[in-house]
Length: 249
Image (cartoon, rainbow, N blue to C red; front, side, top):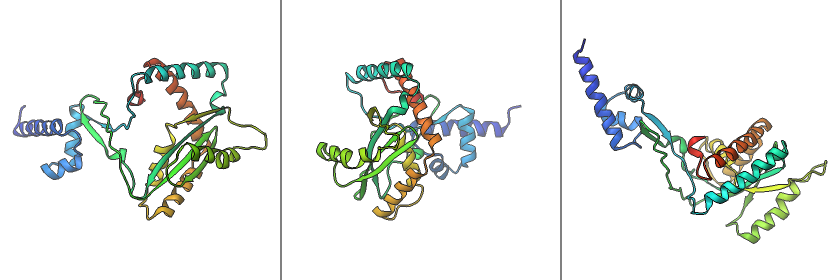
């Protein structure tokens, strides 16, 4: 039986979906404040019509030749993995990143409401006045670093960092050493920043302390899962001809 309540619900649903269609980046909190509809009701309407909150992906632009190079590298890595099951344990994954005292883009708070995945990419970058540049790496079940960098990191400074700090820290009693060096780590920074910015940062020294604590708290089991995820990415890169794969992970 069709009732007045049914009619009102349908009218409300149409209005809510129309509003999110016009402004898909609007949060349910903001919509609730503006419309007077509870967040629970908003979520129910969105779920009923199979609308989902898609996460922001921060991706680098691919140049024309990049997909071919990415595919070529992935095929080389796949061959190495087939020849040596411990191949990922011989790679030093490394990268550097800026940590700002006033924080950075919080991907957890960026949503795009839609009934289909828009694969939305936000090129924005937060600029802060006080920051710390950090180099860090993953080698098997070990975190290498972090090492704090003063100023901008240029070629000569990078070589000095590797020679004076990174390579000495890699020495082991067994005499083992990474056989391969891969710049850019897909996992580390998002994980660290989620921990570091879990509290309000007071100043640069507090920021450095949070980074050190976050690195020390990463378990060997988590680092092993990073290697497994890298193998998955290698396979997906080949499957998708070197294009972005973040939206399907």
